[in-house]
Length: 133
Image (cartoon, rainbow, N blue to C red; front, top):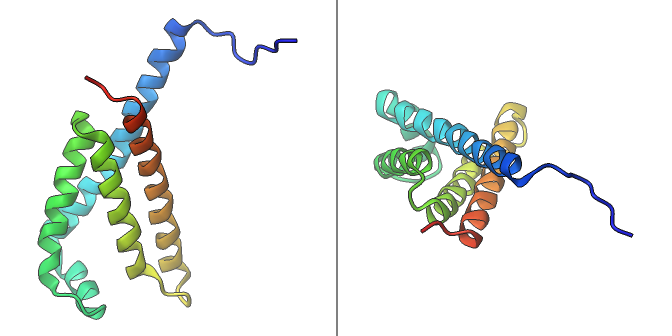
């Protein structure tokens, strides 16, 4: 016995899926673009966080470049699989700065970073399995 869960014509489902993918990419890009702007216009916050964990504050500048370039790739649809994977690793790594168990706000940011990384890994897997070309 065959059960049809969704009987929508492909001509409706595919454009909706593509629109959802584009909207998701734009939402993720907004996050990284905001991070780049924050690093550019108020670098002292990130510099202090880096220094507090024993890293050179100069790492803020490569992070700013990665945030900017990553956001541009997500918006323009360039190198989506590899860039989503790199941004996922970046999100996981930077989440460790927020591992402060006594501070619920920081722990919330840590969890959100991992959720963002999860979404980026889904995008990376999707793009790896469905290359455009």
